[in-house]
Length: 487
Image (cartoon, rainbow, N blue to C red; front, side, top):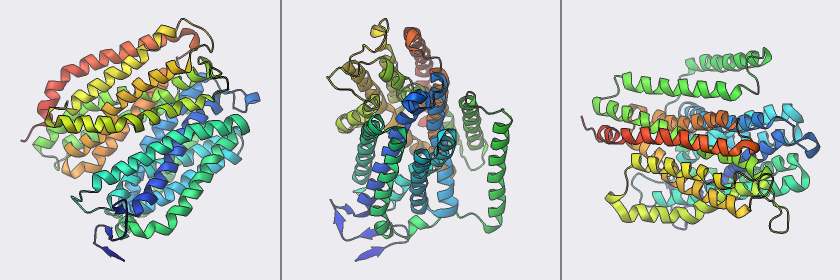
């Protein structure tokens, strides 16, 4: 028996004290993260491994740029996913169709050959993953009334599921790729997503009617103009590609410029809008240095999907334990550390209460720790070949994890806290754009990585980020004043 309100569905039957649908949604989250983390790693190797090894044989720099661009486009697509949810389908329906889109993307990568499969598959993955990332949390939120004391615990269950998927994705995908080939690796996630959808579909009704209703529906007379705009954008991109204006080598740069201009537009709109009051305008200004710091952080952090993967394949002794280690395995290290260390971080901030560092200071600490991670590559940079002990890379990835926990859980929380009332969703989207900007910008930087000259690369990147951190540190007192502005 269930009772419902206009906002959400409240169930009398629960699991672990929570609405049963939390397990359905967490299950989808597991397979979505399995897809994303598994794909980013296998994609990197698929692009630059030789044709004889089952890859496409692209230049390493091109493979790095494309992998980073894929990650950036996923976070850009969260903005589109949020719009579709708000204006067309509602969060649960958008999530449901997004998971199907991801599944078809994996099938395209598994079945279609070469560049055709790459283009079709990655396009579907970008759209689908963007839609799921932006609507999975919203769908979970619909399970609880406002101020429900179970809400935070419910999101912890979701976050745990996401990290289980992120942990399993590279492990299983890498294992299948190493034994059966790339296309079977891509197809594995399609099977998992189909299984997740089969378990989820019967319980969709538990989320309630609010998940299937757009909160700000698009007027019928605007549908045609929106459809025309979408067709125009696709046509322009197709024409630019056909004319050679957009190429594999410059796609990352073009995406970076577009994301940067879009981000600036968001700031200008919020600062100039009459719907933004004086106090809100000050907090938006304070968001600018925070946005830059987060973008620089992710420019380094997301190199776990590019430079670190080349490093794992070419510099690490993958036979160190007496059996071959698929290099994809190393990308499961960070999710494993998050699962192990995350609760300790949460307990620390809870125990410190008001004495814990402010959000701007946490960002600074995270930026400094990721700089340290890059500096830790230097002691072994004089060696050549696949001679680095696996434990060395695992230790560096532990430092990556420590840096992430100062930034990733904080940025979206801060965005929802300081967002102008009229621009709550847009402010959250802006923080996703900071991740996209960091990912695509980091891909441009990472193109210069070469194992033969890695000492110069790691030192230069670390010192550049350190300069940004020093400048950002000078802005923190001003940022705190603006964030605390009441009038």
